[in-house]
Length: 327
Image (cartoon, rainbow, N blue to C red; front, side):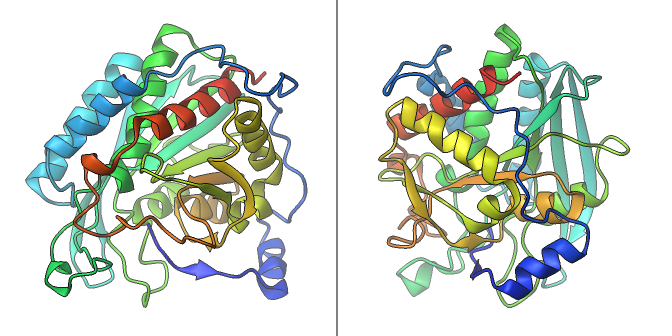
């Protein structure tokens, strides 16, 4: 993900309104029922062990860097897994160009439930991994690739487990799970060099004139000591959804994880879903202004040893409760 932290200015807010994108008005999320007493159990239990196995399988392929054999094999696994659970699975196979001219053989993967319905939502994550450990404290590791247990596999693992649950009991709303590719092959000095897969999808949606009520992006949602603040892109474009999801977390007793704090303004896949296709989308991301990104971010330590099943369970329970209560 792009780790360019922005601070929204009046100029930015004005520009977002001027081009016909979201203008800060309330988003009708079709709010989930959040009137339950504090610390209720979710109506449908999320299986963190199953989620963890989906994560481990991805990591077992190795580094999922676009154009590599490991990346292609993992992509086949993700497609075949989603085909077991979803009504339809579509792939967008495209060669994208990285900031340094590298050609990235990329694949966006879209799994749908009840594809004919107009009453639909998006759940998304990126499935590629970064080719450089450029945030590692040891300089000798900077040219090594990131294994991406948290930064990539965790969000996908949660979505695969949700997909399995949807195959058992479909929610009231139609769902598209989108696994974006080529998100993490970028450089902060090059504008729009991250999130290439989501940019491609936003310009070329898998269905003509595609629309959804809103989207939820997952990025780094399994690390030990995780804390999810409310990033400013999410609050600007999709504040109603953001507040409803965080309220659901509160009712389930997860307020120490989904913290009621303002986070930075993160350029992640959700930014392009909001800005380029105009679908309100929030980001559940391990980042707070006090702590920044997790210590494993873009380092050789982004491994399964630093994944916490309880964090996965919390994120999964919040999402599954919120989604199954939508009308």
